[in-house]
Length: 163
Image (cartoon, rainbow, N blue to C red; front, side, top):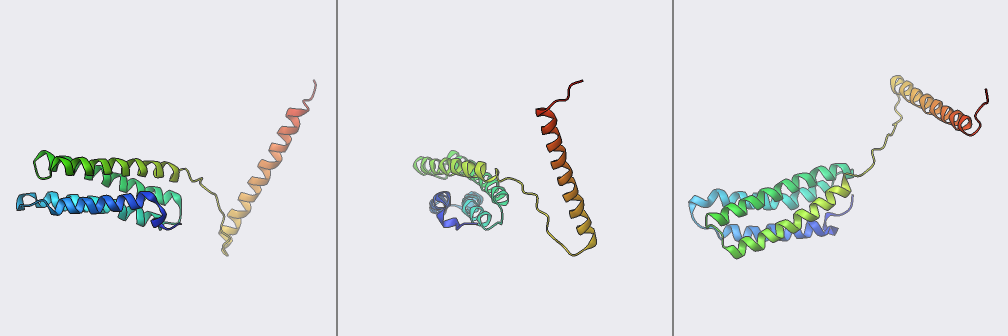
């Protein structure tokens, strides 16, 4: 698969993670330690899943990791709202980060929709075992039979017999 650095969503998610980290580390007090940790973890999970997903062999697997990144984006959005509501972060930080989260989530959704459309391919891998050879032969026989049947039906449809 291609390099994750070429994806704009990856760059935006990385910037979001850095900004969320900056804001979260500014949260003071031991009573907010859980918020700090959850904000940072959710924020860095987004680009990490994009990177990990991009290294997968198929678009379907990439889509799976994008789905996880989407979940992390939603989690981050909630933690930011809660942190704002309890006064742990400022309104300006909340607004800025929420705008970034929404933008990244929209981009992730678009990538997810495209990635999961990869067609499922039926491939037969030649193996040396007798069982796989028989299975491949049966598959080829069914394919030939379907081809012949299709040809007969086309001929019949274009030249109907009169009774």
